[in-house]
Length: 322
Image (cartoon, rainbow, N blue to C red; front, side, top):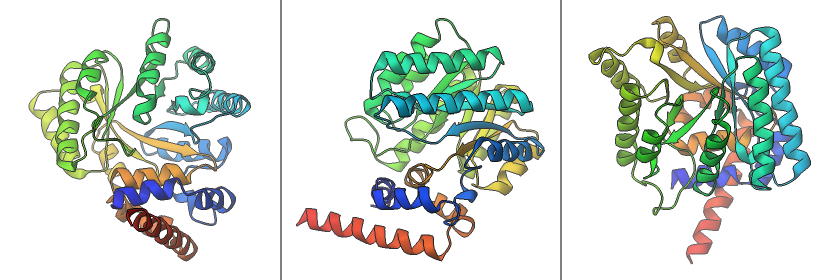
């Protein structure tokens, strides 16, 4: 129910609107690196100073208007230019639905091709983030199309999908970020039990560490991190073949500690005003994340708003059951 709660909150229009309007006052600066490119570059420089690289996400998804998708593309192109100009250690993460996947496949492909070509001219990597199951195959199709001419792209494998093992084998020669998965998926497509998801997550990580090119292990779970540390040591896997990834604002002490220990570390750096849905899905993905950031992120106003929305959400669920 807790996962359902956070997914429900992520779709709450009142809270999404309030977050865009009052983001910084609600504590958004603790979960996003900035509301504009200039602020985000400064946040990246600070992380780079600690030996941490970054992947930058221009927040927003499920765009249904071409002008909005085009504006998102232009914003990402500006980010790429800023990364090059400031010579920071960073690359791009993007969501196909923000760039028009729900509007027209060829339109979206054209937008991504322009981004990948621009990034390639500066030797910047582009990661295609994966979304819910309805967008999964089209996103892989885009990756297939782009990779015929470009090698500076990779994607994400979500461990809760039954098809994840097949996908990781097909795309083993790509740089992959391996995650558990953050959307609420039907039982016909995905594991529902945490133990099954965790077991598949570790299985996928181990496979790609042994057989893949470069692996991004995206987790805040110190048990899995410690498992990976032992695994790479036992199998003599070079540190250059993988990195740990965490979200901006989550487990900051551990991020710094892993970087100091000599591991490659990358922080997922979101920026922009459309941060609320993103953050709620991170809590849905692993509700324990709430404990990691609650003191940094929430103030009394935020807690009050979330409490009201949570109450409305639960009341709605109970009403439907009746």
